[in-house]
Amino acid sequence: MLRLLHDPEFWVLVAFAIALFGLARKAGPVIAKVLDDRAAKIKAELEEAHRLREEAQRMLAEYQRKQRDALKEAEEIIAHARIEAERAAEQAARDLEAALERRKRLALEKIAMAESKAIAEVRNTAVDIAISAVREILAQVLDAARKSKLIDEAIAALPQRLH
Image 1 (cartoon, one colour):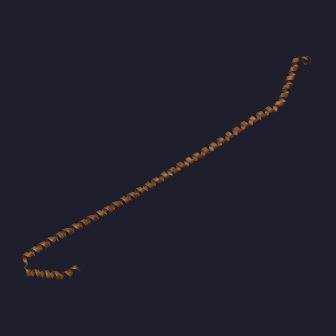
Image 2 (cartoon, helix red, strand yellow; image 1 turned 90 degrees about the vertical axis):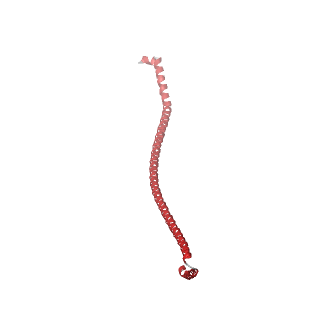
Image 3 (spheres, helix red, strand yellow; image 1 turned 30 degrees about the vertical axis):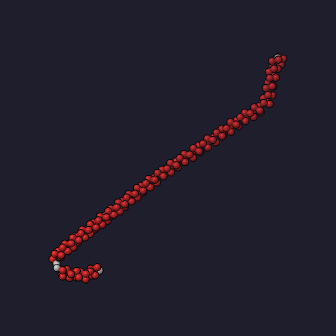
């Protein structure tokens, strides 16, 4: 062992060990601080990534809920539109039926008026023909005195016939 104490390589080894020990003692906290800072930075980044992931999941859930709500609202709008369309179609059918009924009634009234007018025209024509025939017959059959007497009677009967 004494021989070891005289060996220069041994003393170089001891000096190297002391230098390493001193260096480790001085640089150890600095290295530990650098490693701790790096670990803290990585931990902060992981927490930020976790927070961002949770926020993204919340936003995704919110958008999915909004999409479901929008689809439900769209279905309600479509159902309401169908009901309104059916109601409008029923109203249009009722309006059409009423319009056809009015036109039918007007047509029947026009037919009745035309029929009344035609009957009145036929009656007036018949009266005119009858009057003409009576005039001709009376002109041929009656003498002047009898004609005068009939005219006077007709004039006297006019006030009763007009009332």
